[in-house]
Length: 171
Picture (tube, rainbow, N blue to C red):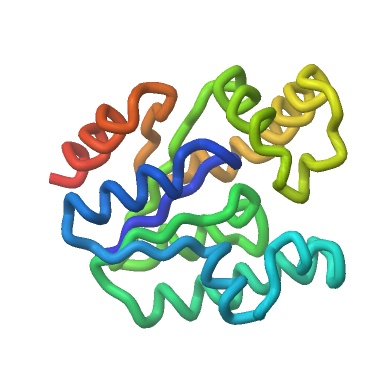
């Protein structure tokens, strides 16, 4: 079985994914890092040179590649990945996959992202208020896709509590 973590930027997908993988003796793959390695470009550079749509196509291509060849792996998706090309529909149809939405409060996302201005989608936002408005709009647009996950886990709690919730739901 593979676990697919979905959620907004800074929802804890990588942190929780790595720690949960270690606990369950699973492998961990961050889709963005996988794409960067395959393309020999950073996500930021792909956005700048080839555009968001090209990046979304790469996400789809490589996610299909990964899910076809791995087992006992936790895969962390980019925040927008579930929202393009019927990704949630085909992931949920796979027998060896369980999708998990890490739902995080707007305030926590804003605080985390305000401290990390390196992400291409938010680099242009200068004030914390503008960032919060941007995130709120995105969450509104994306929640339809995120909520299609097999499991919704509140990740505004501690990392340990979030992991315990995930593991308890797998049994």
